[in-house]
Amino acid sequence: MTSTDPRLAAAQALDRALDATFLDAVGHPVRVELIRALILTGAADIATLASQFPQDRSVISRHLSVLERAGIAVSRRKGRAVVYDLDGPGLVARLGQVQAAANALAAICCPPKDTEPRE
Image (cartoon, rainbow, N blue to C red; front, side, top):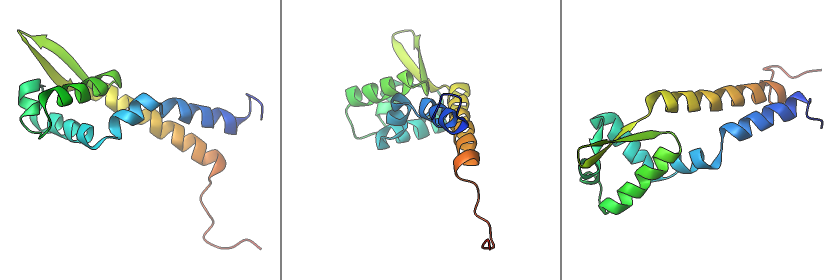
């Protein structure tokens, strides 16, 4: 396949959209629960978030760092506390990239099956 091959280009676009940092961030149950907590509570400091989980505060802090590196969460200082929130536009854009790349690849390599068999 050449680099101008549409199938290869679509596969490479999906590969870029599904990078390991993003998949790792959304692939851990505690991080999924942290995303849910941020959706429900909005911006919160680490103490508030950690109080909702059985894990130590340091573990929750590391999970939040992973979400931040993946562009899913953002943090800011508020006095002595660090407040975390979802990066809504970033997350929506990232999910949109995944969907667009998957749609492009599916259209090339995985067309819908006909309902009637071909003769």
